[in-house]
Image (tube, rainbow, N blue to C red; front, side, top):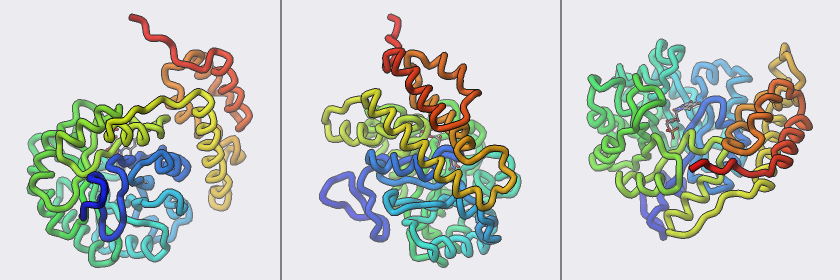
Amino acid sequence: MSAMSEPWLWELRGIRIESPFVLAPMAGYTHLPFRRLARRFGAGLVYTELTSVDGLARNSEPTWHMLATSPDERPVAAHLYGHDPEAFARAAAMVEARGGFDLIDINAGCPVPKVVSRGAGAGLLKAPERLYAIVRAVRGAVSLPVTVKTRIGASERSAPILEIARAVEEAGADALALHARYTSARHSGPADWDRIAEVKRALRIPVIGNGGVRTPAEAVARLRESGADAVMIGRGALGNPWLFAQCAAALRGGEWRLPTFEERCAVVMEHLAGIAELAREEVAFRRRSRFEPETAAARRFRGHLIHYFVGFRGVTEMKRRLNDVRSIADIAALLEGLRAAGGRREERKA
Ligand SMILES: Cc1cc2nc3c(=O)[nH]c(=O)nc-3n(C[C@H](O)[C@H](O)[C@H](O)COP(=O)(O)O)c2cc1C
């Protein structure tokens, strides 16, 4: 890592990370259209959805499609999971050869039973030697920076994260992203940022802290207090890609504002159009889909839509109509309903 002209800029093997606020990988949410928005609003780095190295090695079309990328989202990390060092290294080399990615990220924190039962994701925290072997194998197979995203441990009784973090660094990782919760807590409960500060003090490579950050003030406070090189934001960014611009402004001590209703709607429609494009591309391999691509996209978008309008007037009525959504025009009509209800949040009751 080298310091650039601004104190919060850093570099990984020549890849510039221009903001310390990065978007967390979130399966089902951090597809290409959302990552592009996050980058446009200033996220320093984005990660693809979790992708299986075995699927890549089999040249499975749907798996490669999970890694759909575009130049305007860079720098982007290919976020991969697997349990076999050789298979991991082969898949990482394939990803590098395909081009378009800036980092290879190894997932060692996913708690989903289907992943853990195969010894991948958070399963690697229970067999850290395997994690180190994966890092070494991938490091030897690619020239891109190699990073690891993990948690502070499997549970409070598990092997100390400091030991694991040092060994991951020793194995050749270029940066470590640390979600400050145990696997046993999944995504709930308080995040222990003291652990992040402790790991940061012990390592030479950059440490990206993660967990529980929802607002610009929290993001700046966590960055400063923990000494981490970056703060990774997950759920706080859902329906809120503007958060990255707000965090950057807060870090500079400047003012920031919320998007207007019309700005919000424009981003919503752009996000939805991006999902529709992905759905059209999927026709090539999802031959038995229940819905036409536009309908599939509109229905897939419903979860995002709710995030964009949390607390808005008219949202209860919008949710009631979600089940009937079949097209992009239906989503536009839902926005029209929110506009008619005033296009703003409910006032908080004292
Ligand atoms: C819906 C959802 C999907 C997630 N998928 C992944 C994933 O595929 N890989 C991963 O490393 N973490 C995943 N996470 C964890 C996030 O990257 C992040 O570590 C976690 O949400 C804590 O950050 P937050 O408190 O800012 O949300 C996911 C979290 C959520 C809520």
